[in-house]
Image (cartoon, rainbow, N blue to C red):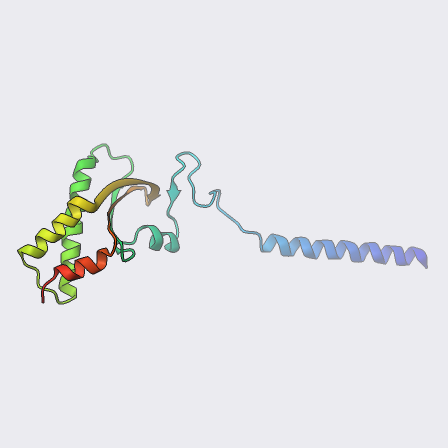
Length: 158
């Protein structure tokens, strides 16, 4: 009788261990060889999900103090000239801010255009980010200024 009890206890123990092992395997956080989206060779963030795209590739007013333009350039393209990319970013920032004001039913005149250019030239910075998306390098042009969104709104005359 004691032998049967011992066999049943061992069997129950093995069954419990098997079930808990299966549960932990099925709930394990699986990654496809990436360490939190970081490329092991380059150390750059790999943007591979919609959540990361939304966070890192968003353009426009990121907050009341930050306006961002995202430029993507092919990773292995030797024709990427940083100064040309920066000029492209500044032009996009200019047109995007003007379109923003137009969407707010603001009048765009020469004074508004000059104010936007002033913000771009005096408060804008261009930088390459340590991230990649779809085999492209990512560059940001950001305008950082306290109460930037409010200041831009005030540029447009009604």
